[in-house]
Length: 219
Length: 219
DNA sequence: GCGTACATTTCGGCC
DNA sequence: GGCCGAAGTGTACGC
Image (cartoon, rainbow over all chains, first blue to last red; front, side):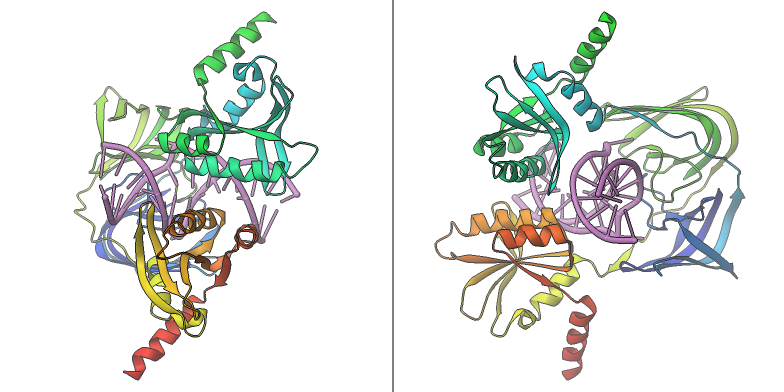
């Protein structure tokens, strides 16, 4: 990893055209060849960047970064305040917990939290427009499509609505009911879901995990 | 801006729980207080971060970054290879060209590309649920709502559908037709649009700009 | 401050 | 490689 602090101007020509007037900035060159230009605010997003794979050509204070698609980042260096290189090695990577996939696993494994007699048909039930998170049956044997989100918002309800519309065209499955399940459901999403006859369920992640842990302890 | 290269481990507890095992990394502390932890690959995204506004508490090689929502980033420093601070000042910012707003301007100024006799009612036509990109009339005088995207995908069709539903409740406007206009339209989005009676138009950005340039040259 | 729409979104998964 | 959906999305803008 190479860190350069320099007064520079930057031009990007690719998916759009953009220009950065001359100012002091951090230029980050990573070992995969990628380049990012950062200002001194906003942690996350570089002002300009080029994602790998790409090549860096350096001549005379003029850096040209280019990728296969022909996108170009041209950095003109005017005054270099720091130029420091470090060997970091390969990162062991991030270990995540609590994402949607895990919620799906937990719920699929514990359908009874939705009601007595509910049973899983399958997870990631494939349709022409994408996979339904969970397809199951309620106590009466009615097919139910479940959409799971960490945060339940309007677009999640829209997604489930599209699936329901499609699934209900299948005479082997119809009628199919909908359940919108999330750790937190925004009021507007709840209103839209109710308006469309979709039930909302708030999932307790720690609770589900706890049940799962208890289950594991039994065996 | 403060640059620290150090062997460190990182724990994040907030919207999810995540852990980074000990390894050499770059820690970027910006003047707005934000913190980002970068590995030596992937230009764009930090491994872990905390967006501003947030506070950094430093004691004994243990950094605690916290925001108002109570999300926490804990960085444990083990071996510091570089610790370098720089005053960069406020960045003049990026100048962009080619984004959706520009497409909207160009199309509004050249409605005839959609058909002879089409005329603009107004751009950014305000409704209770947000602004319609362009409201216009076709040759027959029928009201048309246009949604413009750089890349036309399903959520854009959903958005236009919501607008059409609302606009068609207004007896002064109804019936309102829909046009989905984008530089590129994904097949699934096109299918959904057609299914809902929405026309799709592929916009030629350079073409539109060329027409505009020709127009300018005439005057 | 909340809600909505945009982003050179990036990123991962699957076909 | 393209398409699709998720992201700790982040970020700007309007109300």
